[in-house]
Length: 197
Length: 104
Length: 99
Image (cartoon, rainbow over all chains, first blue to last red; front, side, top):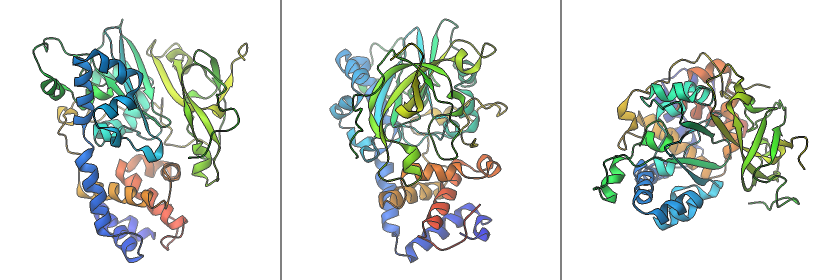
């Protein structure tokens, strides 16, 4: 790719690459649209939230989610959300009153995209990737999450094919809510560990 | 996916103390610099996966090795001046690890 | 050989941008900031699906970016640079190597 392309506005540079690939017969616009539509239709944090809400109301499912996350995905029809072709495999780690978990990929930004949707910018930022393994308590405070000193923190660096998701603690005062209502309480931050739920 | 190598059961078990190798390759690898030559404990054994170091270089077939979730104390990684006592876990291919003296 | 992408523990990178932005935490936060990001994502999926490169080659290409380019590029800009590099190196598209 010649240097002059590098100085184009980014959108033009992307379109130029697409055009060259289409001209070369490598792919079609339809294939690109299809890949995007399929992704947007299926990859969302509502998937992760469903797993959490079910675990909150059903102790048996909670045990399954923690002990064999792929089996739990099958139960909720979410197996396709993980990229089986690459060997991507889910592991769910639970927060307790004594332990808080937070996820990172320091080397790039690996993330369970199918269950959480595309990762937020902060997750991909050099600052998050560099600092959360070294000073998690300070980083979490920047998110407004101030953990008491007696809460132990585990930071999971997703450096291989396992993709991690946090099972947050169920918020207090939610006893009357049904599963669907509970699922709506779960944020992306809660699933990554930068929020309480 | 390629079959696992001869040591299909894996060299390490949960609870084993390991030391990560002090490597500094010119090629792509998935052992982060901050955890090289460090003491950790195996927390979980995963199934074998192709080695990214080989796949990135087009080495075919790539070596296939067990991956281990290894837990490191923050002080081991960052020293005593760091934030304190948290744990960092990293998923590491078997050839990134050596047994710590005294273990098998 | 240290690669700039191997960021764990690096100091001096400042506060996490967007950490206080509640909108980014919500379930309905937009997946991409701009159309071009979505197109880059789609390109990576289609090209990877056609086995023009594997995930590890893709990451390696990102990691080989010159450090200042890496830090100044946004996430999907890095993806774009990686694809341009790989497609040139693998002679899928003609052109000089980028960078």
